[in-house]
Image 1 (spheres, rainbow, N blue to C red):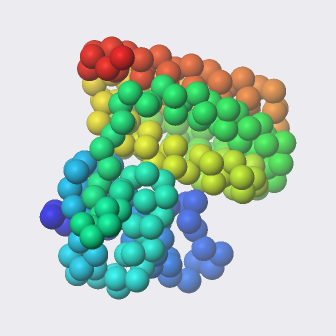
Image 2 (cartoon, one colour; image 1 turned 30 degrees about the vertical axis):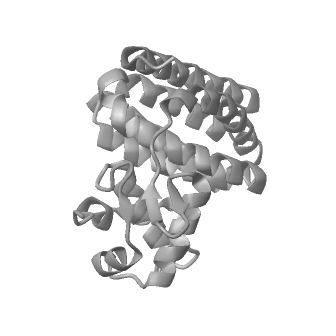
Image 3 (cartoon, one colour; image 1 turned 180 degrees about the vertical axis):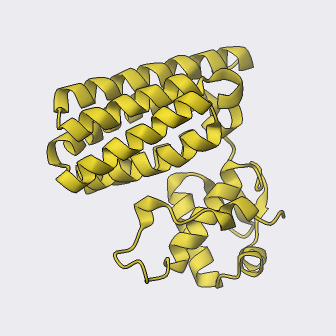
Length: 238
C-alpha cells in the first residue's frame, strides 16, 4: 500500500471544516478524507482488500476512526463489506453512470437554487472568489486547479443551501462521480469548459439569481452527461 502523500499534504475538506481554527480535524473525518482520496486516485484500486490494522498504522489514526470512515464509505458505495471476508474497494459501475447523473441533475438543481436564495452576504463574497478560482483553472487548464476550486465550490453550495436531505442524497453520488472523473476526464473531458460552467453557477449564486443558478446547474449537467456518454461510447459500454 502506497503512502498517501498527496492526501496528507492537502488540507481538510472545506465541507468538513470545524468552527474553531484551533480545533483539530476530527479523526474519523480525517480518515474518511484520506482513504477516499486513496481510492479515487487508485492508490487503493477497485477490488483491493482494505485492512483496518494496516490503514491505522499507515495513517497514524486509531482503528475506531478508521472503522467509522469505512462505514461512511460503505454507505456511499465506495467500499463493500463482505461478511467473514473483509472490506473491499467497490468496482466502478460504468453502466450505471447515466442513471446516476439523472438523479444528480435534480439534486444539484435544488442545491444551486437554494444556495442562491439563502446564501449570506459573506457566502456570496466567497462564491465570487471561487468563481475567480474557476477562471484561473479555465486559463491554466490544469486539473489540479479545477479540483481545488471544485472542493471549495461544493462545500459552499452545501453550506449555503442548508438542506440536510439534499446534502445526504448528493454525498454518495458525488463520491462515485469523483472516481469516474479521475479515471476518464483527462482523456475525454475539457477542463476549460467545465471550469467556465462552474464559474457561471458560482456567480449566479453570488448575485442571488435563483432561476439563473438553476439554469447554470442544468447547463453543467448537460455537459457532464455529454462527456459521460462520449466516454461510455468509446469504452463500449451500452
